[in-house]
Structures are given as structure tokens and as C-alpha cells.
Length: 169
Image (tube, rainbow, N blue to C red; front, side, top):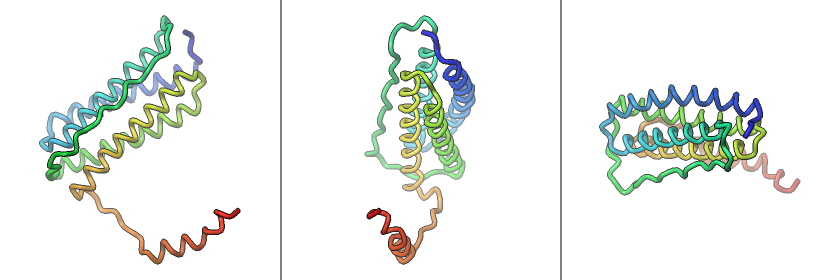
């Protein structure tokens, strides 16, 4: 199956990115002590490897069938999350940022892609990346790994009142 040039070019760029991210996550995985963070990083690695295999199948000029992306595995959250060492917090923040950026990149790439199978798979890849980001979010939140400033109720009320008319437009 002959792909549109834009699809091939974008996937070639993605494969280069995946190579670097997989290498970095493998290094991270070797140093982790927190079992939940280790599970998320290992799931992240497995997911990126599935993305690579899927893109390679899409690129194969001898392909005669529709390619499918494997589903994202789930994580058992019924364990003690524990705490994160300072270096693990940095790893979690970096891996979350990576998942966020890759999710955004996959979604924006899908908007430019021409082949419907390639486009749909990249939308699913984006969803998987965002799901990984949410897993890191959960872990970081429950280990107090970042500070998130909050607005007052009054500021929220003022904003609500200011924009409330839009729902009737």
C-alpha cells in the first residue's frame, strides 16, 4: 500500500523521537525504587514499543490489511503508592511532560495525515499518551510531587458571571 508522502515523513520523524524516548525511559526504569512509578514507566515503554511496531506496519509497502493499535494496558492502583525520592519525582515529572508532548504531537500530526488508517491510529496513540500523562498526574498528586496554585472561589464566581451569557447566545 502506497502512503501519502506527508504520512511517511511524519511517521519517520515520530520513529526518531520514539528511539530517544525509549532509550531515556529504559535508563529511568533501571534506577526506580517506587513500584508504582516503575509500573507506569514500564507501561509507557511497552506502549511506545507498540507505537513503533504499529507505525512500521503502516509503513510496510507490502501491507495488504488494515493496521490496528494494541489497547493500552491498565495499572492496578490498589497498592500503596508510597513516596517518591527526589530523583524519582524528577523522573515522573519528565516522563509526564514527555507523554503530554507526544500526545499533542500525535494529535496534531493526525490532523495533517491523509491516509485514514494512519490518521485514526495516530488519534488513538494520542489518547494513549494522554492516558499515560494522567497516570503520572495521579502518582505525582498522591505523592505531593508538585505545587499547584489554586484560585479563590470568588475569582471563579466572577469568571462564571462574566461568561455566563455565552450559554444563551
